[in-house]
Image (cartoon, rainbow, N blue to C red; front, side, top):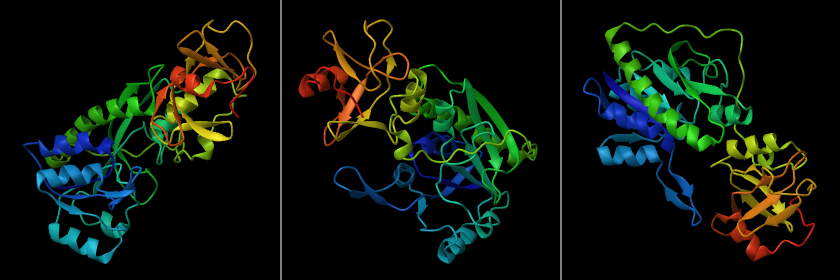
Length: 312
């Protein structure tokens, strides 16, 4: 089949590579979000999908809005048979959905109908799910509500960050998406409607939402930090300055006296503990404003927390 692939971030790269390598299908163009400023210097950068498409010599379409007439005209001229999608990042209007003969087919990183929306992996980690997965479904005008072609499951490991889970799901999901393209071409796949029960919504994690509340139990703080890693990054404040936090782990007896929520204590030469609403946790990586990430012990040597000082 002639395919137009739609995607933007790095998590879409395994699927695009897999379809480029497919002997059965031809990726003729890519749709991705427009270039935007990135990094400390705020230099305009291509999306990861656009960069791979450039390397492969593909036409790259970057509409500001998928309903733009110029984009719709070009897509009509390309005449794709199907448009596989992975984390494109914009809602598609009916005018665009109607162009490919087999429609738009999305790889979504949850077991639908659970966690529809922009942040299914982050929300699964935050909720403490033991199992998640990926679904390939036919896009319709509703939010991730279309009928499903197939799914796969993935165990959420105890120390998984969202980044870890994305890495595994993106690779396994690429195979599922490619198999779905094969099945659609062969006419042997019929998508099934999603169940009416079990629908949950997974909105994007906001910066305010990932500020750590140290009065919460240790397990809730652990989930929050892992869910927000690598983005948007959990954070707290120390001496009125914001610091970002990497994953924490249980102190497991390293602290002999109870700590108040947020209270810091240096343990030995290489550990920094902080109090929560229940048991203390050990800090991992810390990133102070304007500085590179560093181990918590190195951060403590530079800041020298006084006895009783705390995150806020």
